Amino acid sequence: MENRWNERFNSEEYMFGEEPNLFIQQQASRLDKCKKVIAFAEGEGRNAVFLAARDHEVTAIDYAESGLQKTKKLAHKYAVHVQTKKIDLLVDNVPTEEYDAAIMVFGHFYKEAQKRILDKMKNTVKTKGIIMLEVYSKDQLKYGSGGPGDLEMLYDPQEILSWCEGHEVIHFFYGEQERVEGKAHTGLAHVIQLVLRK
Image (cartoon, rainbow, N blue to C red):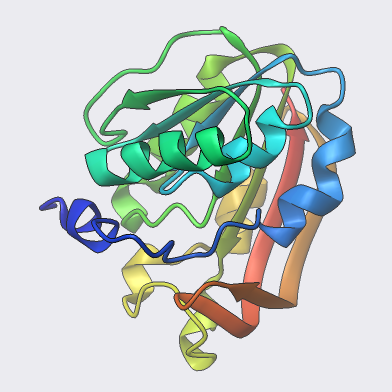
């Protein structure tokens, strides 16, 4: 996939706003004992900066250099530190069992790569570590409030639940949520939420 996100993030405006994702805000207390957190496909850094302000050591990874630059800018604005790493999750490895938690918000990957990305999240957290994510479900196509217009880039709840087998599911949700996140995600949406303990 060409690096279209690098182009999309290459502006002064924050595509998804500067405020963290509402699900991450609501579930943030579950990360209180997690010192080191990695944010997958973090884009412009809004969730990473929010967690850094809650005293986590946060590493934001993305394959769009412009997004990582905006993450640094946002961290500076809110006087927090976020480590950034340019990583293409489709091809690059991530550290093994290094983090206490991994988060991902609306990671847009084709179906063939989704399990591989989730496995990387699982592998990068320590035993008993937390995985937290919110992604668009396949039903999102009917809503038109953000996300890919390609069914192959949306997520199936049964596939995610199957992937969870052998681990403790702390929170799972499949349904409608209101999202107001910049120009790119606004309105009623259909999402899958997961909080998992490895």
